[in-house]
Structures are given as structure tokens and as C-alpha cells.
Image (cartoon, rainbow, N blue to C red; front, side, top):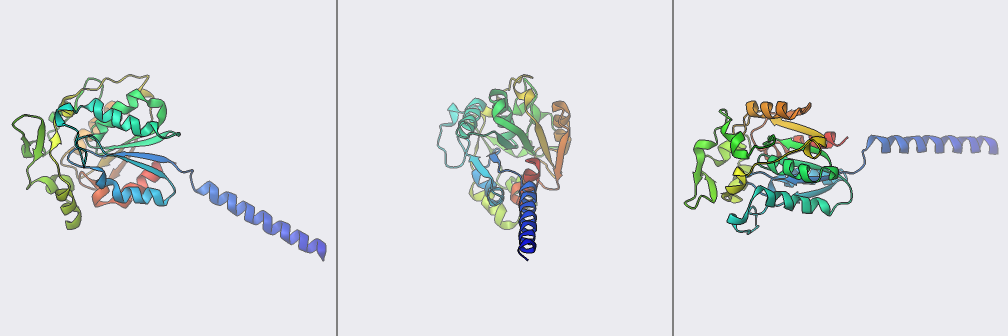
Length: 268
């Protein structure tokens, strides 16, 4: 009888150990995501995605770019390098490598970051984002996009330091597929966009930016950065890992849980 009981206990222990190991294998190790917002937006846009990623045990850093959100850095001092350095500072506080995510203008920023600290980045993720080649600025890419409807809605300030989006075009351009509540949130958090960083060109090398794995999430209903331009940028960068979301320019607002699922999958 004692031998039988011992055998049963051993079997139960073996089964529970196997189940525990199997469960651990199914759930990936926690990752650190660094999320970078785009133009005319701020950290709030990532709230729902951030919560989803945290619930799965990950770490999340949401960067507030200078001149956005509540940041009061003088507009005339801003540049793409200033944005870059803010993100590098956030990454430097993390011991492990990060998954660096950028949306729209944030794609320019994460590209510049990857050139400087490629060894700190496990993957670059572009979500409906500008993805330059060396020598290009955001304005160069934007002007090459006949499918974009943004240009006619821009108003430059008298000092040429900021760009506004016409009030009646803001939600139509950026989140036409969002709920009324989300659209109102975009209106409530709106600020004019610093203009100088749009003209700053990137310098990229094979030894820096070229060494980092890249993923692109296309926004199929986008009228700010058209799917056509997205395809051209993806091809120029040689990206082969591509996902899609059937949304407007701001999928983290209109379909945040879909974005979260993709980011979790990309981390595997």
C-alpha cells in the first residue's frame, strides 16, 4: 500500500511539474516597451495599450516628447535630436533591451534613436509611421505622399515655429473611425505642433540603424500617411515583418486592444 501511495504521489508531482513548465513556456518573459507618440498628440494616446501590456506582466515607458502634452520646452529650441535624446534618456534607465514603438512623426524619432543606441533595442515597431532613409526629413516624405489629405489642413504660425491643424479637420484626419468620446479626447488634448523637427534630416548607417530588427504595422484607412507611402517606406527599409490594422491614423485610440495584441505577438 505504501508503495502504491508513493507511486501515486510521484505521478501527481510529475504531472503538476509538467503542467507548470508547460504554462511557463506558453507565457513569454516580460518585455519592456517604450512608446513614442506622434505629432499633435501626447502620451495619453497610449493609455489603453499601456494598460493591456501591463496586465500581461510587461514594463511600459511612455515618453512625452518635448513641446508636447504638458511639457513647456520653448518651441524654438526643439529639434529631432532633442526628441531623440529624450527617448535615449528613458531607455538608459532600463537594464534590459527594449521594444521601441513609434507612431507617425514618432517613427522619425525611433529611427534616430536606433542609429545612436542600436544595442539597447531588440525591435523597432513602426505604427502608421514615417520611416526615413538616410538624408531624409519628415517633410521630404510627407511631400512625396499624394494620398495624404493633411497638407491642405495645415496652418503655419506667423513665426513659422508651429503648425496647426484646422479644427474642423482634426478628428476627420487622425481618428475618423473613433468613438465620439475618443474624438473629444483628441480635441481636448490638442496642441500646435513644433515645426522645426519636421525639417531635420536623419543620417543612418548599416552599423547603427541597419543592425536593428524592424516591424511595420500598416494603417489601412490612413489619410495622413497613406498606405501607398507606407508601402514605399517599408520597401526602402527592407522590412519583411508586416502587420495591418484596418483603421485610420490612430489605431491605439480606435482599436487599442488590436494594437496591444500585435505588440504582444511581436515580442514573442
